[in-house]
Image: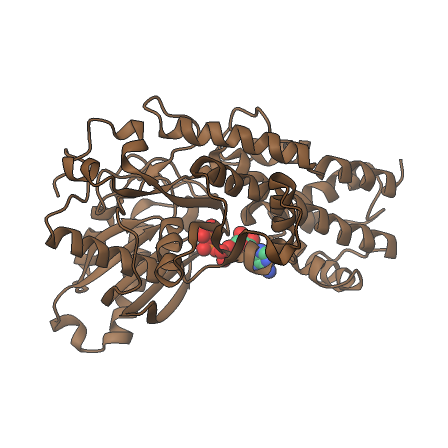
Length: 466
Ligand SMILES: Nc1ncnc2c1ncn2[C@@H]1O[C@H](COP(=O)(O)OP(=O)(O)OP(=O)(O)O)[C@@H](O)[C@H]1O
């Protein structure tokens, strides 16, 4: 077999046909419903306890932190009403060993970063001022019975820290903050997708969902309280009477963990088997930023083992797991094939032939296209479930923002599923760039929560203390 033959085979394996997209989407709808049922399913479908649509008129000053898979962001937000806001943000990269380190190291890191931010942005006023309300955006599956708590169900996105699963993460963080005497009180815990949904709806009433295509992949949308069977018997009367909306954090990276429909390749299977959590997050492992560089690396290693590529070269640096993050395939596709030459020489000391460079470039195109096409199955499933015929899907994350043509490819796949057959600029359901979900969303949610509490409305289950 030649390199070109191997590439053609891979091309077939990574191709997702319109029929397959439809099959995946239909299965996805039933899995979303299963997640809301009393017995539950693979997709957690976590109620986020945001039970109002923002109007754009919310106002006030709030602090927010966002613990993503790669970075911690600390944000100071001023909501100005009229869908307007200002914010100041700082990014603190999460040290790689911390992802699998000790619980207290993580909370100390967050509390230290927060303390640094408060000192920088509030100066000496910090220690004497009233406690600043903080919205904590926690982008891991956490179950909530109320807006100010979150019990981690399981780590995802390569995190695996002992002693946190099964725990309410709000007191863990609050204790670390208190030790430093930082004047901050954690008032709400939200997921980044719920934050994206609410921040974008604050600015654009046509928003129908919030989506993240970053280290992981996930989506949030508004359902209706009475249509959530697993909350039956646990909802206070006011929520049922008012037919309140309820933001749902789907955590749909866990879709199809039983492998009924996803067209997984041997590379996807290997990534799963070598991950800290085999058997989990099958969907996410095929489409999210943490894994796309690894898919490329495994394909190249496979070709190398068949003596088809990088012949007679020492490729040790490329044999290190996760030696390529998703910026590799993304930048390779963005530039033309000659860019590959410098990149492989500088990063791995590997020389490439012209044919190899062209094939590597085209592999990146295939990996990005597969990711975009599979990504829309979650979107299409929510639209089918809620009977949305039009609207904006507010999207964020480096894969959405930086992987070339992600949006166009996603729109093409949506058209494959819904068969609109019109000009792409007239597609009724579109992905648009989200407002900064982590800060603004947390601020709007804190504001909506304050208003509910003032009006004596519920913000949690009957059993929750609020
Ligand atoms: N140029 C790029 N193009 C595409 N993906 C990239 C690029 N640079 C980095 N990435 C990938 O993006 C991921 C980080 O995404 P993002 O910046 O949205 O972080 P995050 O907020 O930590 O993610 P999440 O919200 O899923 O927790 C990393 O897995 C990385 O491999």
